[in-house]
Image (cartoon, rainbow, N blue to C red):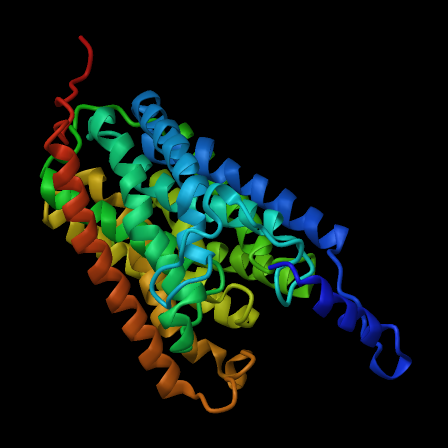
Length: 404
């Protein structure tokens, strides 16, 4: 908001008087450059990374659905999504003051980056959530259904949850989410699970998966995921370095733990298991990437691998196939990481402790309420959106068999 001429004159008079002199905060080019570069690097995880990681045997159709969904979501986020998530408004939804990315501030309050820079980062997080959903469903869902569904889902699920966590009632409750565990990982995973129950169409066992695509996709996700965690510091600071190294340690711990679990339960270690667990570790530490200590990051990564394994077993028993893979790979580890995060904030475990007036029990309660609220809203809103779009285009893709 611009200051009127008379008030501006008074302010100018005050700041030119030595007794009232205050330091002028301006955008820092180094911080801006870091957030921009890291955010764009995150797009590597979203587009080629997710396409190869989830496509594996049918990367073409998955990539087509992913690119289409990301394009639609990008436009809608710019038109109104960002404004509803972060503009002036209520604790539940923002208004239209920043529609079409208008009226952006030269400086974000409390930060050294401009609002356009912040928009770039938030856009990538929104696209990550949409990308997880599109890539997980792309093997079995019709693109004519999935692409418009992705845009609607972004507006009615991701945008409200992002508002609640970072500028609304969950944030006021004291919920901690450093890099998007709730609106990105948990919402994306739960949404894929909800659609999988509607589709009841697991992928054909006749499709030949390509381990090279899985490993390459996981590697790109590892790199891009770390970049987004570093960008979440909103500046080139020690917090960014902490988030990156914690993310890397969590992924490494998840890989090692996952290999041990797979060896114990199946008698062998698979390439797909290693690729999956690298991503589960990153998802598990997302909520506290820049806050926990190195030991906490390793523990969260290990717990994420166990959670993913258990969730994968449940998905398999429900015969949901790869359609619900995002829940076991992203949703379940992030859920465990978000709920148990307060334990690893304890100073005795290398964490920074809690703010005055808060404590372990209060923070556990806040995190639990947030996870339950996000899961419930995501499941209900996703089903409504899916059924609504299915009145225009069928959800399921015809079963694919191996070419003769």
